[in-house]
Amino acid sequence: MKIKIIKETDNYLVINKPAGMKVHADNLSRGNDTLVDWLLGKYKEIKDIRDIQDIKGSEIRPGIVHRLDKDVSGVMVIPRTQEMYEHLKKQFQERKIKKEYLALVHKKMRQDEGEVKIPIGRSKSGKLVAQSEKINEGRSAMTKYEVIKKYINYTLLKVEILTGRTHQIRVHLSSIGHPIAGDKLYETHDIRVKKKGIDLGRLWLYSAKLGFKDLNGEWVEYQVAMPEELKIFLDKIK
Image (cartoon, rainbow, N blue to C red):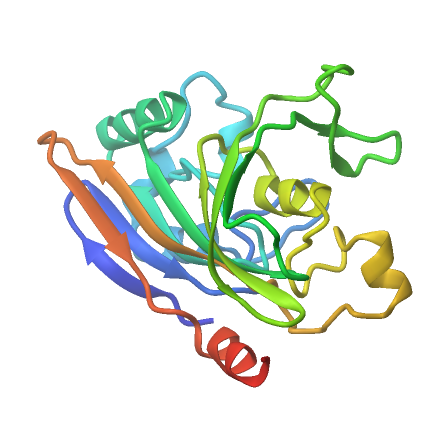
């Protein structure tokens, strides 16, 4: 898979991760086709960049300060120095990073904008789910969305996340009845029963824009164009 380098500096890289590529290996999968494998082959210094508070966990994800799901494409920043890693990590923790996505969801949304603040936890089966605040067992999560365009059976959204939970956008949008197109894992019961699900071979979701402060304290933003396969699908619907 071809990875496009958007920006290369001495302190960080900004890339456009393709859909279908895992960011790093895990306990269930090993191999040499992850983003980390590609990074280690091209930027040797990254192997020593890690979370000093989680040495064991960071062994399989050196240089990774944030992630995108396997079937999600888009902008990612990769620190090339430990100083930049800590600098970015702090901005993520303090929710100062701007993370903007575009998502196509099932059904026409009634509201033109909104927020989802439902905590995210795991069900007994291990699947990530949005949990009632009364249960209060999940981790806090906040997702903001704004309608870009409404179609007959879909809605195109601009989505911003203020937290970085695993599958956050997918879980939150599904919890309000609007699962992401192409998402078999989180499609709602009515979409499944009516067989309205689609097979894009990926999710209709991508990281469109990423903004942060560099080591000089200057705000920088990077963005990517809509992937061609998503644009083609969008052009086909009404």
